Structure formats: structure tokens, C-alpha cells
View 1 (tube, rainbow, N blue to C red):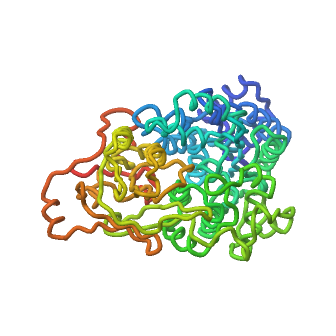
View 2: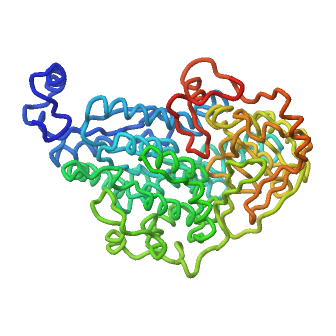
Amino acid sequence: MTKYRSNVTPGTAIWAGRRAHFMAMGLSEEDMLKPKIAIINTSSELAMCFNHLDDVAAEVKKAIREAGGIPFEIRTAASSDFITNAGKFGAYVLATRDLIASDIEVQVEGALLDGMVCLASCDKSAPGQLMAAGRINVPTIVVICGYQASGEYKGKHTDIEDVFLHSSHVATGKTTVEELGEMAKVAIRSPGVCAGMGTANSMHVLSEALGMTIPGSAPVRAVSPRMLDNARAAGRRIVEMIDEDLRPRDIITDASVRNAARAVIAVSGSINCVKHLQAIAIEAGLDINVMDVFAEYGRKVPLLCAVRPSGDTLTEAFDDAGGARGLLDQLRPILETDVMTVSGKTLAQILDEAPPTDTTVIQPLDNPVSTRPTLNIVKGSLIPGGGIIRIGGTGERTMRFRGKAIIYHARDEAIKGIANGEVKPGHVVVLRGLGVQGGPGLAMTSAVVFAIDGADLINKVAVITEGQLSGLVNKGLVVGEATPEAAAGGPLALLDEGDEIEIDVEQARVDLLVPEEVLAERRKQHREFGARIETGWLNVYQRNVSPVHQGAVLSPGGRPLAGQ
């Protein structure tokens, strides 16, 4: 009776209550003794990202039953960057990640279930699920639920990236509302996540590199036979993992975290992977500084495949060429391959069995697409905690910029200023008061970068933002997730309009060129930044979230805002 933790002591009140509920739900005496497994489903009818997950869950359930387990489907919160970003200027989007992790903890740990299969889709589901896996440490497999098919507009490939980009061109008159509407009608042709190497596909690649998926899972076309086969394989494998007692903390180690960072760099993945991987590491009990890992390997690991938006390669081509497994195979000489994976095999064993990689798409280490660092960690007197610059592909990019600050405190305020001609060549556009505390939850600021592009200023100005950048942002000199943020009393709080800032990518520096005596006078002033949320989930999040360079996880005991 006690082989599995879900089989609680007979005769107790807990046992009796569970027995009453489970048997009323149709479980037999034999079923009561089997491992009980959560299927973590972020299904929602709000967005195409995850409206196919109920069908995937059904296939996983069948596989678990056939393998001798009992599945329980569990729903969690779900957020889409394109849908959930409408309220509170996008503050709910990142905050959903930690809500998902806690939601899973409540249901899986509260019910003492034996393992879980997590259906990963849009940006925040995979990191939230992996955080929960590390936290509660029961056998877990992540199922990659695929990317969406794209369409065509005026004879050109059109996906959600193109829609997002052109949406901010409307304000500057570069795109009409009618054109944007027509593009939006054809951009998404199936369920699944954004087709480019945005945050979702980047996190799916990261999940496989971390060892938490069935080998050969990422990326994958949504609702394809291979995606469903992987889902069924996960259902069968989770029962074996429970009997083997193979847990996330056996898989998520310092070495596998480093491997995941290398993979993200090699495909020029989203900057959002840095904070998500840090959060996963923290929840798995690791003492590793992920920003330092990216800073080190960003200058050692070359770009092997330039998937949109970093280059012209479609996700479908990356998928067909070998995907994450093919990428890892090409990276093998610089990986730590003795790490364990959910398959029960080491990464070395998986790569030994991997099919050949198409090296015309995923290029080998000795013939990379580019040796220029794709994800650059920068620090300095303005942002001592750091910021991230994504520079992928092979095109010409500005690597050093010196200019005067023009400051905005809201996304729409900045877009209006760009449309009105306030932003001039030579400016450093600073988006302040929009970090994890001030936003709260990293306000969405990608649209500002796209508006700058629409005004033909993308290579004539620089941008520094505390807010969130979509994984699709890959233009211009843009410093994302700058920390410590102004709301927490960081140096950004001392910045005034017209102050000179220098950004040097090669030296990994972002410095405020203002005399110390001037800054000392400013420190005497009362300066307050960011929104103040008085109720609800965002209030809880705002009062407890750690800085973004520490993973933006919820901290025990809370982290009061500056001045409170």
C-alpha cells in the first residue's frame, strides 16, 4: 500500500476521503494502488497557443493508463503575450509564470501525486512547469506541444512576428490599419506557439537541452504525428520514471543548466531564457549565477543556426534539420554529456543514437554561421545588475553607442513620442519604472522597439528598457531587462533627461557619464517610479518578486519596494 506516496495510510481520514472521491470517479480497488500522475494542462480558448492541448492531454491519459498509471488532468493559469498583455500594460504576462508554478505545487503536492507530465505551449508555461518540477521534485516530463503553421500575404511568408512588427509601424504611417488587419487574418494557420525563435520555441529547445523532454521533441509542428507520438511516449515513460525514482533534481544540475545556456546561445534564442533558466535553477536548489554563465559562454559558443528573427531560417527548416537534438549533436565537443535525462539515458547516449543532422541548416562548430556573441550580458555604472543585448545573425550591427537619454515611463507614452518626432538620431531611449517591481511583472515594451523601426530610427538610436522584450525582438541596439530597476532604487532612478550614456557591447558595458557629485545631489531627492498595485495577484507579486537578474522569483518574506 505504501509503494507510492499517493497511497496514504489505510484507515486514516485522508485515506477515507481520497477513497470516497476516487472510487466515486470510477477508480477500482486495483487502480487505488497504482501511481497517480498529474497531466498539467494550460489549455485555454483565449489563444491559439494552447487551444489544442485538451486533445494532447487525452493522448497522454491513454498512454499512462496503458502503462499502468492513473492520470489526473489538472488545469492551471495560462497567458499569451498577444492576448493577456491587454490589461495592466502586460503586467500579468510574466507574473503568470510564478502563478503556474504555485498552482502546480498546490495541486500536485497537496494531493501527494507521484509524478507529472507537463504540456508546454506559450512562453510562460514551460518555465512555470519546470520551476514547479524543481520545487516539488517529483518525476516530471515536459511535453513540447508545437509551433503554429504560418500563412502568406502578398506572396510573402507571414507569421505572427510580422504582424507584431508591423503593428507598431501603424503609429508612424509605415503600415496602414487595413494592411495590418489583412496580415493578421492569414498569419496563424494552426494551433501552437509563435513560429519564430521567440521565447516559446527558445524555451522548448532549452527544455530539451536541460534533459526534461523526450529526445527529439523540440521544436515540432503542433498537432503533427511526431508531436503526438512524443506525447504518448511521455505518458508511457513517466510511469517508468516513478518506479525508477528519477526526479528533476537528478536531471536539472549545474552541468545541464550550462548545456541549456549553450544551446540557447547557439540558436540565438530569446533573452527571456536567461531569467527563466535562473528561476528554474533556483527552484531546483542550485547555487548558480545564470547571467554569469551566459556572459561566459556567450563569447565562446558560436551561432550554428540563424532562425527567424535572427536570420532567414524558418523554424520548420530547423525542425527538419534535427532541431534541438541536432543542435546538441553539433555542440557535443563543448557540452557536458554525462548528464542524465528523463529518458533514463545520458545526453551522450542520446546523441550516440541521434539521426544525422543536416549541417547545411544547423552548421558545425568549425563552420558556424557567426562567431559574434548572440546574447550579450552587459553591466556598468547605470545597470550594475546587468542587462541583455540580443545580436544574432550576420548583418551589420551597431556595437557601440554614445548619446543623450530621452526618458519614458509607459509604452504608449514612448510610442506617441516616437510618432510625434520627439526621438531623434543620437538619442538613448530609456523606458523606466517598468521592471518586475515597477511594472509590475516586466511591462511589455517590445512595441516601442518596433515603433522605432517603423520610424526608420532603429540603427540611429539605442534603447534601454527595464521592461520585457518579446523573444521576437532582434533589431537595433536594445538593452533589455536592465537591472536593478528604478523602482528598487537602482542607478536608473538617478537618470535625468539629457544625461549622456555609453553602451559598448564588446566591452560589455553600459555606463552613465554623469559626475559623482551630481549624482550625490540627486540621491537627496525623493524619486518614485512604477505603478502601485493595491489589490489582487499583481499586488502579491509586486511585493514579493526578486530582481530580474535573480530570476524574478517570488522571495520568502517579500521584498518591499524602495521607500516602503
